[in-house]
Image (cartoon, rainbow over all chains, first blue to last red):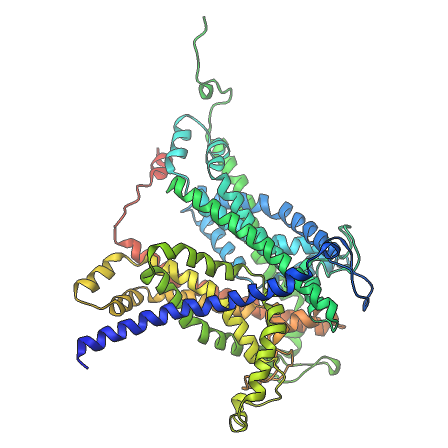
Length: 281
Length: 331
């Protein structure tokens, strides 16, 4: 084989391998979605959504407690994380280049990489140990801690998309930096920041590990903040590792519900980001 | 008749330096929460693992016996399981992730680029508990069949020894690989995008084939590609739910792919609420502390590698960004 021919063959083989790796990665995605549809969608029925779990071993019952629990936990996390995350992101974007802003960004990146189970230990030692009780508050705190760095980073990235001329214009008109940030820069980036929050919500809604020893899970319906509370993910876990056939079915239904919510949030965020990029592109 | 005035000129309080200073201070104080949080996590973990650190010292990480009832805590099996499973996962996921990144950024027709990128991102959005569920009910039975149909002669190798139970190192590594691919490929894609197109043009101009041009691009972006893989490694090291559901949770270090094993994150998830005495709890927190430090180092390293590439690429003044903000500040 001539040298140039060998080079061309090698090139074709390499291109083929790259295409194959894309297919290879999409196979599990297809499989997972297929099983979710097959096993999850069929088990997703009225009773699943609106009933609480039956006593152990009794068939029937549903995930109503877990759905409400997850909503409560996400709400608590948002109350903590949205203001802190957005303002931290604003600070880093406004004073980028300053050493402190770099430190904040570095810390946020670091926090983003901390395993969620470690955040769970932290929340346990801060919010469970002192009062000696698992609680919705502790679970919300754990999720909030995970959410802060995500929001801070996306907010910063999106604020950077706002053209410099916006800030320059506001400052030239005599606005203070606070005024410029509040009434010019933030509103311009608001759609982006909202999508960033959606992405963060999608991510923490699927978290299990940080809730295991903070919110703990609860077989009963509860919205009390100082008591253990159920969560969709934790309940999927306990049902999945249980020996009951009916619980496995419900675990699949729960997973289906979770994935639908996460995907819808991701798609909305995706579309919104594209629009934003085109606007400021 | 009164003169019309611009709203901003009618402001009662003129803009002052102290206003700006207050804004900077107030937002900075909130931003400081992020730093404090990172510090607080480290401190709390350290505080709550003191008992175990003092009692066992470094022996904790070489001890092979984990028997909480007897008060014996050796964390080597977890350390081994975490490193082994992450290594295997990266071995599989690394080439695939790079292949995907290359395909999407260099080879695919422009129309396919966005949808493909989005599909791989969806893979990243699936919660780990769903991967775990899929692993338990779909992947593990497949692996069990693989184990039972494997010829006896191969089963004698240390790599494939152990009971054919399905759950074990192979299942964990496979799940981890699936979970790591979208992360590493997304970052690697960004990295390839940061490689200036002059690199590709130069290679093609010298008569390179496609593969040779891409090799030049990958070589130019090598630090970033390594960074992308490290980011995936960081994910794999800390992954908890999917792994604990399929690895078998057995604290026995083994080279065998089929043997049920354990990881650092998995043991915390499983035993934290059952830890009856203080020493047991502190031992688990120490495992968390080391996991925290290791993932922090791996992530910091990967960011540094990616940054170094990006700043190097930016050093070539292709698009000089006029920074108007700094001129305003200076004025």
